[in-house]
Length: 168
Image (tube, rainbow, N blue to C red):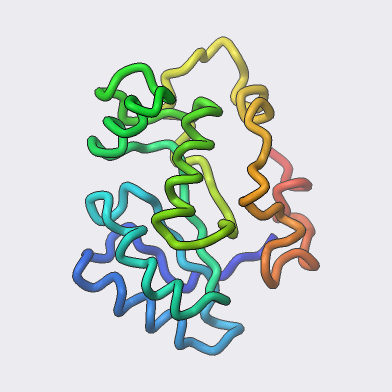
């Protein structure tokens, strides 16, 4: 898989995020790439700040992450029963990943997400006796998340960098 990042939102201040995303969307199609974000960026506001831009540019791809939880997200995840305590700030438990992915899809205003990555899975404190790959297999993909073959402008470029063919 080859992905050209059009905008990484990790260090973009919240008050500049929408304008930066609009500039990325206005780039020529072969240069606009993807917007990379996460629900904990911009102090938990990145998705909501990006949603209007994504609504105006439905062809713009977005990659987000699951794993880290802001304090507000942790309280909501605990209330939803997907983490044990609202003090948890990271989880890649299948139920939490599904919950966070659905929440991201809603906040971004997208019926489906282009890509969801696990945010620093090495920080997870869940059952290290069970290999990470086994835990990930326990979380089947949502019908509202695209598979690699359906990613815009990428399905035909599978090769050495593809998630299915990458060597360790």
